[in-house]
Image 1 (cartoon, rainbow, N blue to C red):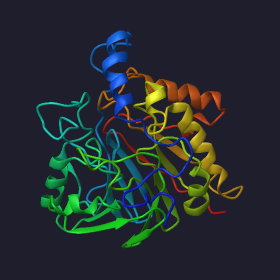
Image 2: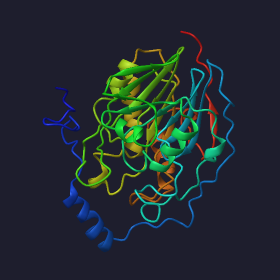
Image 3: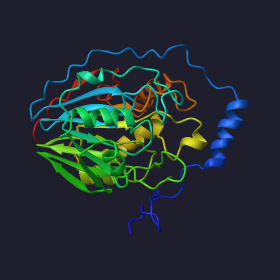
Image 4: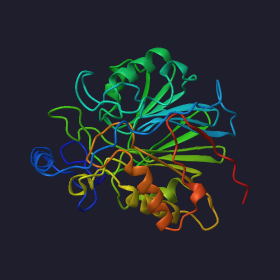
Length: 337
């Protein structure tokens, strides 16, 4: 029995003090703190203008790596000659219905209909802002031959929505898709889409490697002790996509969402896992901010606070990539050791 497998079924975070807050704490937050304490206001529409993407069409060269931010945790990655989507979300609301629930404050970085041919879709867990019913159905219809990788317990929800080629992975399991090796990595979070299914499915991040090129998508996670192990087992990485938003109030969100300072420490832990001299330059893209108003911090705070934390840690400024929605960056190949 793995430590993250719950006796009797389901899953859990295996580290001390990693249990998410419960329903009583949720009520304290939304029915007491939000009614009795003044929250910082966002200054009008979030100032996150889109830029035109420049990803390769229909695919990038096998030795090229590009990253394009759609918004929240949705990226188009081009690696190993494949087009890969993470946590695809194009809907207007992160909700089981489209007339209520958190609405999108920033439009997707580019229109769904302009997607290149999708070869692989990666899901980190089943929350509504990461596994979107409408988007999954559209992808399954438009790209019927795409492969889908998801953590344990999430696959059924994908096949029910039309996905054909679905594989579930446990932490540290790996799957090869053409020349791309994809490994499921630990994360500290929880799962559930309704009453009665809390933590019945797993959550994870994803490490991608092809021909010496490498990317890590952390998924949705709080800070945990395994970042160094991820670096040691799956690194070094040229690019790390790290969540930095949805972190206030801290007493409630700490177990499940990193703040920018946590993300900087996670990055340092990650790099501590691989040998000196390897992966000297690792770019970081902060994600999970600027799309949905999920928690109490101002929507524009995560990027500015990420820059401040990065600078305070003495890390190279050119390695922090604060992308605009739609922006594409091309990773230059590292020189051989």
